[in-house]
Length: 353
Ligand code: CA
Image 1 (tube, protein in one colour):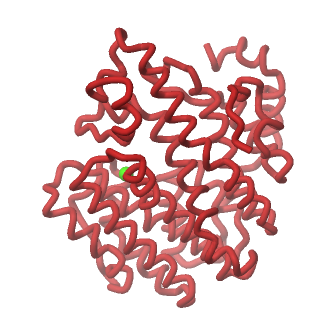
Image 2 (cartoon, rainbow, N blue to C red):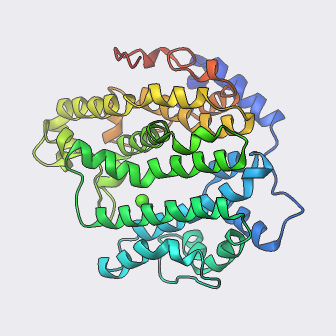
């Protein structure tokens, strides 16, 4: 229903955006004058994330290669974390020592990953390491620091569950807040953004937590129905409504499920003021787009999820036209400031400012 003509009839600005996007925007190409290994990294990026590869390829050349490799390093660690087939005692050492491998030319790993492009990323990881080693030391240290902390944090959480709100924030810090840190430190090291970005922990952490909490909130059904379910809704929230987190998808608990969902959304929304603050401090246009687009998508996703029982019944995604409308309109701060750009569904009684 959402992606039919009716969807566009009720949201004509999205149809306009989609047409504008398809007719005028050429997807960015991989730069020509690069080494075969750098080209390989961009190709891998395109295979593993269409949306990230698009925003990364349009970044300022001073940052483009480093952020592409940073993405692949995080993705490789995440692939090991997500693969529930190997025994914990086999995969935990890989997570804890992954950062050391960045300094071991020729290192690669077989037997990890759930899909072909992830398996290949690890099987040919020596090619990513080769590119990493061409970076200036100030870039290398950022990527290696984040890999160390992320791998260790994920390893810790393989041995415990997300119970308290503190656990929830800590898990999200390891998997997403640290991405915000790495990006912010790379922005500062490139001198395209202010040096203060390298120490703005509260702000970069909020940028990551907001995105991660949005994904966790939206992905309940996918996570609970996975072959090896891993639930990231904190018990401190779902425990107020049901006895077992799996009960949220049972029809007799519909009312409780919606209340729980709305509390998850409220928890995510607490990070919005910091996100707006962070975006307001950026100067370089390509960096602004790179940061703002995922944030606007997340806000739109939460607006769609609010009070929406479908989160427990099917995959909930924003319409393609809406996504394109947001991409085309995420080029300056007044465009992305919540409650201004977004549709009326967002006015759900929260006052985040
Ligand atoms: Ca993961």
